[in-house]
Amino acid sequence: MNEILSKIAECVEFGKINKAAPYPPQMKDQDGADELTRQALEEGVSAQDILTKGLMPGMETIGIKFRENKVFVPQVLMAAKAMSTALIYLKPYFLTGEVKQKGTFIIGTVEGDLHDIGKNLVSMMVEGNGWEVIDLGIDVKAEAFIEALKKHENAIVGLSALLTTTMVNMERIAKAIRAEIPEAKIAIGGAPVTQDFCDRIGADAYSADPQGLVEYLNSLVA
Image (cartoon, rainbow, N blue to C red; front, side):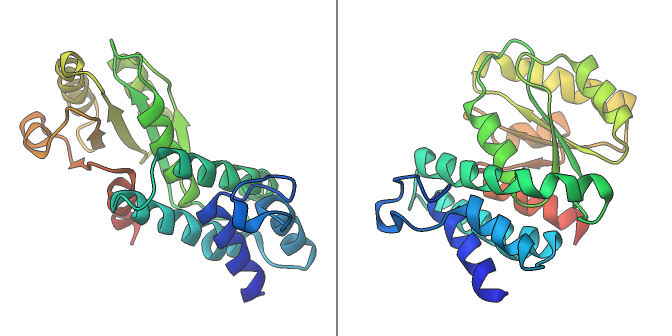
């Protein structure tokens, strides 16, 4: 069992989606996350173990490499694609409750900002680390974040902004959430965002990279 889980983790780390995928070159013609996840389930490996001992370690490794500038966005996107391919087989187990997710993370790019690459990257990294992700998309108003938080009790919310000009909206949205749901946990991120800005607007966490956010989220359920 450990061998197949290690192989799944390796496929995620290196972005090996399936046997037909030519990427990465060193794994050409080898089974990918698709085939190995199906095989593991057929062999009786629990969906929970596939998630926590296969997919999550692979995503954690790629996240750390990304933080350390050892890999870049294209490699992370390939890893996320491999992870998403495997998750298709695990979704039914999430629905039955057989696989326990760590919690719910609501994310959106704030009102006035139409950028989504960073948000999408974060969403994939968080999902690959065992969280349910509710992606509200781009140009999201305070009301939409608040409505989602009321619908998903105890969820953590993430606000993304790529433009300096939309940081004022991030501040306004964070304060609106805090006024409506004082206990809400708010994480923020994006190119112009800093720890000082996080402290000033009363958010709970800031991270310069997806892995830092994952570590913050995991600390809440440790």
